[in-house]
Length: 222
Ligand code: SAH
Image (cartoon, rainbow, N blue to C red; front, side, top):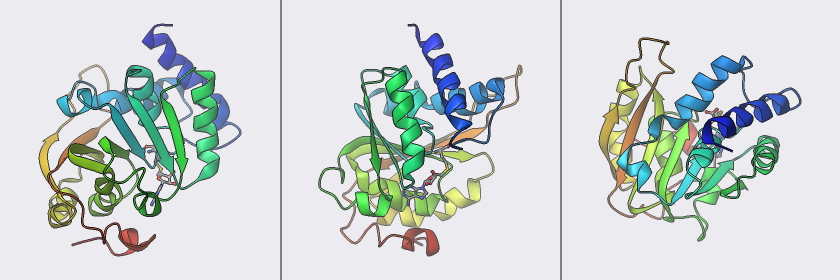
């Protein structure tokens, strides 16, 4: 199966499951292609993505951006994590129906999962879309990344202030913002609209992070 067909099948499988277990508000197939599939794939081509072999998608929900990326990059190993088990059931079923052998799921909260030896400072790349504000998200994601690896956040285009405000938190967690990529304008269609914040892991995350489950969200690092 070529990748375009494989991605269409992914859309059909998720939309079918979505009628039983709600994982996405987007029900229109064309909108799904744009906002879930193409938007997920917008990191493809970035050198930090292309170089990664192990990728964590934190707060994957119904599998975004992780599932489209796993279709696109069969040579990479993906771990898709979420705190809500029923969403991962959909992800697992879809991965199976699509024959994706490069997808594993982990049912856990980031704060707990990041304390485990298997996952901490392990990944070449962590990605995350629509999960939390940049400071909270950095506390969720950066502990998983090995020094020299990267964390890429899919952020809305109006998140400049939030990103700026997260800089001290990112520094405490061992990261630094390397680049902020704006989505390229496309005259044929409205932008699916995510800014990509590329964070480099330059030092190990201190042991005290992430703080206990719930704290990074309630009291974002400053
Ligand atoms: N990334 C998907 C889903 C976004 S909804 C998409 O873009 O479509 C946000 C998801 O993050 C939810 O499924 C929620 O369960 C998960 N989430 C929020 N906080 C989390 C945490 N601390 N640890 C793990 N998952 C979390």
